[in-house]
Image (cartoon, rainbow over all chains, first blue to last red):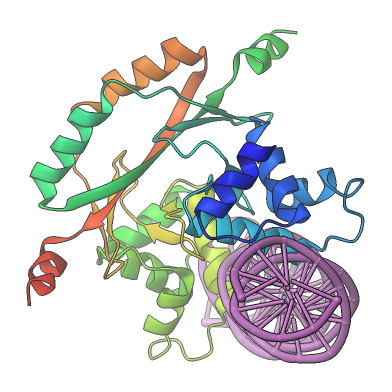
Length: 141
Length: 141
DNA sequence: CTCCTGTTTAATAATAATTATCATCTAAAC
DNA sequence: GTTTAGATGATAATTATTATTAAACAGGAG
């Protein structure tokens, strides 16, 4: 908890209970929640917190590189407190999203893209879609 | 032009002037326009066409696999009449999007993802971001 | 070619996600 | 403690997209 406070201060951000809650929640989950999901999850703890605060806080965190915003083609964004470079896979059935460990092929892929296009790449978003193991099993019933 | 008509009919779609215009426009450009951009581009040709028609038409085309929808993390979707599997690079400065030829590393990447996650992948979206050659030059001034 | 029927269009309203406004409040510097 | 810049909360506004519905039209039957 103190660690989270320190991180926010390092970035010159005021430490408020709302920010701590959102940050803590994001760091302790792997479900890649949307703003709405975060809002609902924290209602018990912060009954007066408004959804706009969640959006503004997330935006601040994204600006400061503390969380990343995922755009999986759904109707809303999802957020991830793991800011290391990694890709995501989403199940097309249950819509869950999981992190991918760093893929060996990615550096070669980046080189291929840079040399064929002349772009100087800054980053990439790699999204994979398919059926997760759980939904595969259920499909067999 | 007749070819476009034939393609729509093959898919059991009624051929209307609006649909032909949108289809033709998408097929003759590489700018990956948004619904809004298409709407504005066709205003001269179809002054009465509404934005809702553009959305509905695009949606129909996507359902029938005639165009694909890109989700680059902007505030709106972009559309591409090239439905072959390919990736995209976007310039972070001028926001232009270009198609990538099929990348050699992709099949290996898919295999890596499938074996590490147990997912059965159906498709993927690979977006790369960076500075295009033109904007690189301008940056030197 | 003309009529019929189901689809498409256009205008409009509705919805959903996100952002802006602004008065109030509070963290943290003094 | 006071002060103050920045954060919050209530609400309105905005933007992208979808739904509704009446009028228009494409395409096939006769």
